[in-house]
Image 1 (cartoon, rainbow, N blue to C red):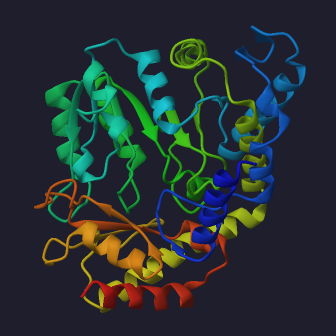
Image 2: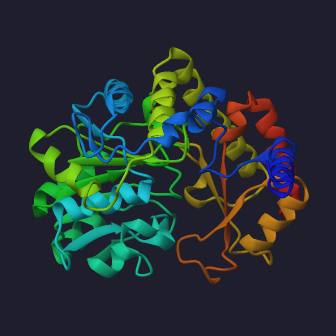
Amino acid sequence: MDSKIYDILKREKRRQFNTVELIASENFASEDVRYLCSTIFTNKYAEGYPGARYYNGCEHMDEIERLAQSLVEALYGVKHSNVQPHSGANANTAVYQAFLKPGDTILGMDLASGGHLSHGARVNQSGKIYNAEHYGVDKNGWIDYDAVRDQAKHSQPKMIVAGASAYPRQIDWAKFREIADEVGAYLLVDMAHYSGLIAGGSYDSPMEHADVVTSTTHKTLRGPRGGMILWNNSDYTKRINSGIFPGTQGGPLMNIIAAKAQCYSEALDLQFQTYAKRVVENAQAMAEVFQEQGVKMVTGGTDSHIILIDLSDSAMSGQEAADRLEAEGITVNKNGIPNDPRNFIETSGIRIGTAAETTRGKNTKWFKTLAERIAVSLR
């Protein structure tokens, strides 16, 4: 290996093993998942789908992709899946292309309220190609479903996007289904942050409510970096698959699909349910300490792995807080909060997640002690 590359790899390994990892969108994949990412599956082009490839020599590619599909469908109790998306954003882009035309209206959570760039942010292609309208949260950071309904009736979207990247509470998927039905919209659920918790039974599943569900595979699900799409209606299959290939991607990453199959297999193990439960318990243990220590949190707590700390009343910005904690060996990320008084570079919040350190076996006592350390640092 090139010595410079190897040196960077060693230093990153040292950083990961010697810091406390609290970034909510990160986790530690198993050795088997990491191994499969680097196997000779990476050598093979497999454009198309199992049984209908554009390249010869794909019999084993068909096998591994079909296995990944059968595993993820069993994991979430759905009839159809596409495991080819390179990322969650790619999955969302393909779904938009499958169901919408340029200029159609989508209604997603505002980025400042906890939504994602690919839910219609103006700087993202989802906000450039489509007429993106947004719903937010109330003054305490909770989704106001009556306000979402009013916004949907006003904007008449063709698609409503539910899901978030910085919303700590349980999202009421059934309420979103009701609202979508009232205005005749498709309901897309982006469960990227919650997918591992959903697989483990510690967060409500959107599968019976959504027309289509997208997700990443590397956050709480603990797999390789990638995306996936799930659905039940067979009439959607051709358009969704076409939205991925040839609509938005070329050849699938077969090494990553193999690693996805492994992470689905791991998540089907009963031990994963215990893991998911502990992730939420650990987050709620931290939130209890923050509450006792007077650390302000958006919504006052959490139902998931996410805690969003509100520093709007502090002289310290989210950027400063994240940098201070990193200097102490604790990695978090700055994050905007609802009605943030600071700009998106400084922010007035930090986002904390418990999935990665729970993977390392940390318990509620450890997380409570950690929360006390963080509370002191934020003073």
